[in-house]
Length: 84
Image 1 (cartoon, rainbow, N blue to C red):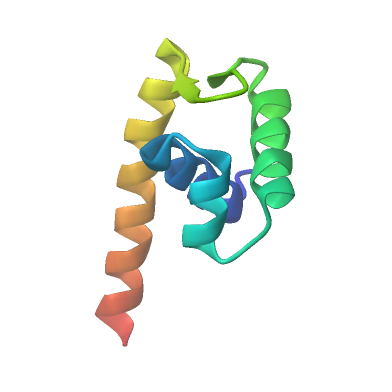
Image 2: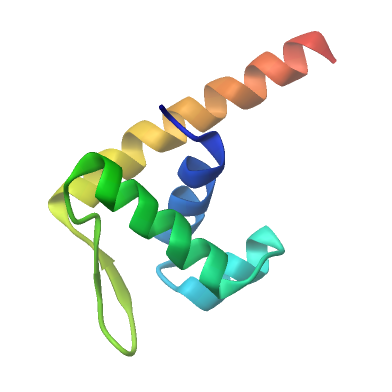
């Protein structure tokens, strides 16, 4: 089942390319972002990012997934705005 929180965490990580920065922007801990990524990669059975000690880089699958996630999250925001 799709977890929108995981998608939000991944999208922020993909845009920030940093666990620390993504966590700060989301107002959460770095471990929560890392855990969301591990859950996504496990569920999807594919590596979404390449991690080094200094940076995070999206894999080809990660780039594609980020594009789709951003669309889904935008649609969810639009749905929320349509009602509020």
